[in-house]
Image 1 (cartoon, helix red, strand yellow):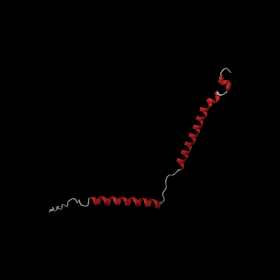
Image 2: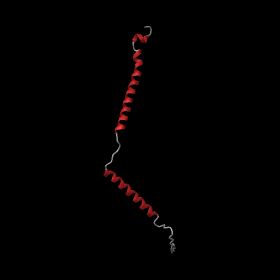
Image 3: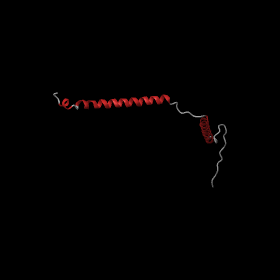
Length: 92
């Protein structure tokens, strides 16, 4: 027993602390990974009943119809092949 660490006995405890912390982190990380894998495999995603699906489809169809009507309203004045003469109005 020529060194101070061997006499005091604290040298081996200080060297074991990083080893213990590393093992704890590895165990926690493994547990979190296992839980994530388990929940990923057992979750079957979002399920909708037929009423919800019908409501979503109806809302999408109404939205598309509204957009189509707005687009037609923009081009209502322009009809290819029909050339109407514009009347000049004199402001006096």
